[in-house]
Length: 113
Length: 116
View 1 (spheres, each protein chain N blue to C red):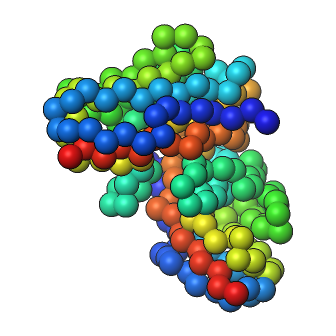
View 2: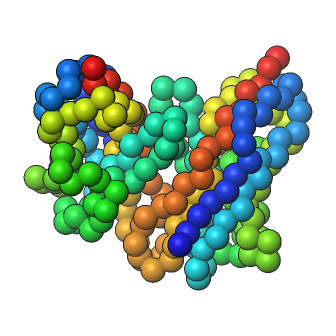
């Protein structure tokens, strides 16, 4: 079956530090990959996505590249801000029309001034 | 800016009581999902509807939980009777199936349920 493994948190960084949150997956076929973000007291919202191998998703300074050879979709940002403090979820959706999403366990990021 | 709405935002109830949570998906979306989030289990899919038809409710405890879509603008999740272990945040999400894959799910703000 499908599974998503992401690095354990919490991750604590100083403002302007470089961020990497690792994500690897197991799936059949050619899934789409996502990063969702959850701010305190809110629902998840899409941060970025990639639908095929070697695609790069990007948004708000965050980037992730779909690496099929390593089954990975690591999230990166060059300079984090306090406002980036949130929980980040890596997720996958199989192709074929059934929209069930498999989520990772989430990584909490805390950015300190 | 279209959003998924959920009511109530917070609910405190006593064990054995019925709980009903409501969700209004984004107008025009044809899929609705119910998730439960807890610290221990993370995000769990409870039910999935497409064009108002239930496609997957394998994650839902059948003896006490039920999910319906009486019309395209309303999805409900009921727990009867409720138990303390049902305490969690329940999220509704909606989306639009295009057949292309990679469809985004749009989450509501959640209903925080506490069963005493």
